[in-house]
Length: 67
Image 1: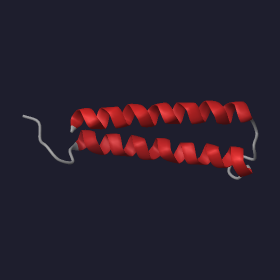
Image 2: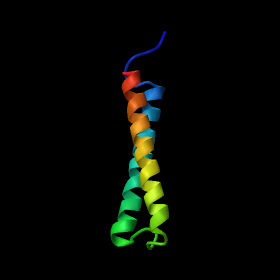
Image 3: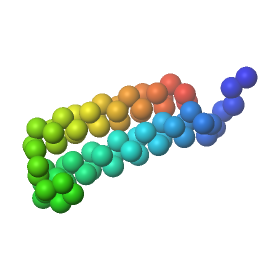
């Protein structure tokens, strides 16, 4: 029997959304003002933004499936 509410799976989804959001914020800041990484590579920033958006969408979809 699966328990409802905030189970381990939901916390893992929230954690992955939080980590992806943090990575997204860091790389957007790097493109905008060069703060955390000093604008070392715009290509790496763009790829990291795309990947973090993908992780956000996938974890949101998994979270909705658990609901």
